[in-house]
Amino acid sequence: MARKKTLGGKAPQAGCKVSHSHRKTKRKWMPNIQRKSLYSATLKRRIRMTITTSALRTVDRAGGIDNYLLTTPVDKLTPSMRQLQTTILRRQEMRVS
Image (cartoon, rainbow, N blue to C red):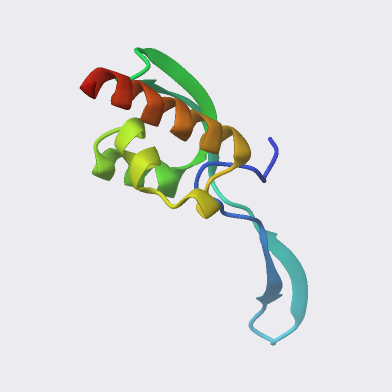
């Protein structure tokens, strides 16, 4: 699975594995990425996305994908999530009017 452009913004980290004898071997730490479908109450449909497990916990803490997208700064979202954020904003404004 692609390890970039996910909700959560984590990327692979590189470094060295250090053995007991202090030999250093290059390695990578990959983020835990899952394909999930989350329900949007505003759009009344499921949204399928790649999301890190830490971001999934944050979505649960925020009270759903709608609240998470509305409270997350625009610069931390992927382009597709920015578009989804503006769609949710428009739908909520229509509901209020």
